[in-house]
Length: 429
Image 1 (cartoon, rainbow, N blue to C red):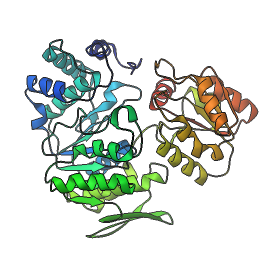
Image 2 (cartoon, helix red, strand yellow):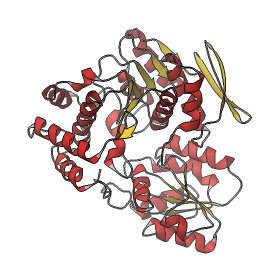
Image 3 (cartoon, rainbow, N blue to C red):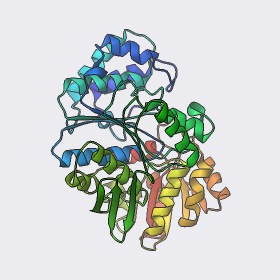
Image 4 (cartoon, helix red, strand yellow):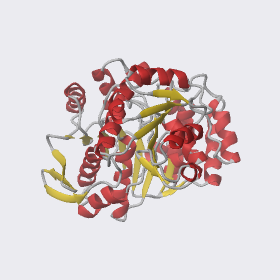
């Protein structure tokens, strides 16, 4: 991961030093994390009640809805998420506010010194900094989003969270989590703790079986979609039902049909915490989560194409492609042109397949400043193989100009990677 240009100099310098502490960006084990946490006084034991969230798709949106629901009920909430989009500070929210630059710089310095030059990954040491910040700041709840997998993820250091949540699991990050859906589900299910209730979003049968098996072995109550709770769209309303009753709510303010199921998991989590309709309504009406079918309305890109409809999405796997394709199909009819940049570790064919029938063209770009970008010509070739009209451009602005020179009122979706989305949010801010 590259350090974003938008991060202020103090924390930027320390983050760059942290990148050099381990030769690999990802190396899944908890040994280094336990060592550093012990050196810091084990802040993971001093957190407010923790809701720990894992899954392949929908983790961030579900976390955002849970946070919105808790805050609508007057609760103060810490939240930890990754990756960031424009600034590292987005990862750490303390009692509702993004961490300040002075606080972040001091924490990173403290963790760097406590690590004493030992091997540790960037994600591990920055997660330790987040836990330290959250342990020192009063709040009512702490939301932790898994970075990768679950069982060996750096966030999986809380012995007894208040609740765990597993959003839909699909095939992604096979090089780290396993080749099959049951193997990947097993890694995600690693966040389940003995006796702690687990909210489970919609799953394929093979994934659900693995999750339920681990929960049974740990005597962890499972509250699973389709069994213990149900959520549907009925006309312009969201209807949620569990064993305690029915809620008739507005549709989620986060766009996309897939947000219905994310809202269901968030509402079930809030109900399990003992919160009522005020929290549920806050979850669906007040959540904010950038780069998830986000409409861009201001900035240089929109100024350059004032009549176009410009969207941004950071989804990057086949399940995300399906969700985006389904959402595009519900929008008012208008030619949709994709500007796409992806990492070379992703299943580009699986991602593009559901988008092929919903797009008029695809313009491929390389992700600026990202060593693992898939070259633009390789992305274009994959799009052509999927039956799409495709070409390349040197950057997003050039791609947008070419599209709108031909069709000034086009719908344009910039998509394929959170790293590309982060670059756009930095440049278009």
